[in-house]
Image 1 (cartoon, rainbow, N blue to C red):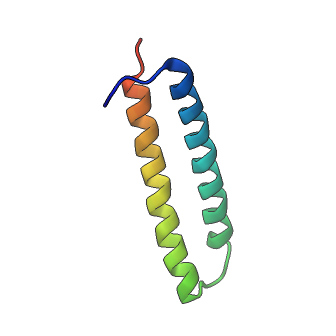
Image 2: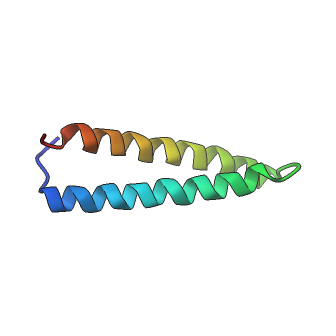
Amino acid sequence: MKAIAADARDEMVAALIEEHRRLDERLRILETRRSLTSAEQVEYAQLKKQKLRAKDRLARLRVSAPS
């Protein structure tokens, strides 16, 4: 991974945290439903994958940050 300026990395981390929070909020809404439509089931699976990708990107950014 190429070096990223600290300010740019901080902005990316903040954006990913916000994305993760937004995805988590939508997942919680779907989880409160008694049953999901087929479209909601697909959305739920996609949201879970997106949330995991955001978490992975956050972890990579944090590991690549200089100490």
